Length: 344
Image (tube, rainbow, N blue to C red; front, side, top):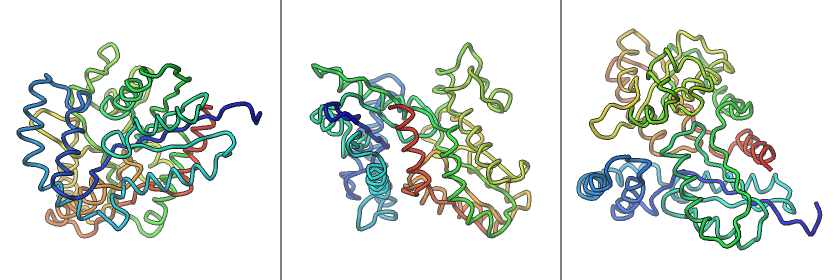
């Protein structure tokens, strides 16, 4: 590299986590997260009352209890896995060419702090990698919103590139194969359940191109330019790509959606329903995947790994296993390295 040429900045952004398992810190996190208009996209006044008077006060104590189940000496798994990924990626990229930072969309370390460090380093370009494989307005879109809100206040704004979707990247699929093989090679399962974080149906319809979205297999069974930004379609595509890579029988594979909030209809099928139907059909052994997350967290370890296991066993199942997330595995870091090079 020309020594007179400035570096390229890389900002890895994950969702976020409370600073501790104290109820007050969890409540603070929930308020920041749920007050994002891209997350709860309703009337601002209604959102304020819903979050501050109902959800945060009553949900924080329960969520704090759940966070204590996954908390370690290093803190939140979502945080330290992202730290580890950042360190590994930094070690792989040429130090004379790249400056890597990481941030959380909500809480610490903030996107503003990460961007300011890159700005202070006088980088010539910033590549923002949202660590959400499937594009959604509530995740990737929110990161773009926040980055631009901050960068627009700068006197000099460098070129900013966003990596918003990487479900089709071969190394992403390979990374999931690498963490799944120890489970699929060990034994055969009766069913393979791919559970993704859910979204309200209204958010999917808002993003529909020319009214294409029908929230059914009719449109999500194929991935085209019409539904390239449809979160549900991207999830079904992710399942197909990983299942094909692992050689899983198509008839044994199910895609479903978890983590509903509120009474409005969310995208279906719901994971709880699929689990009960699977047990009722006589399936005794299930292997679960959570490919909407690249790092283990409450939604993977507790919700899928523990709560859904309990539902399955109570419904007559006998064996439930969860494939861990990509975390800081080498294949995943290789995928990120390739994404950075492609966008440099």
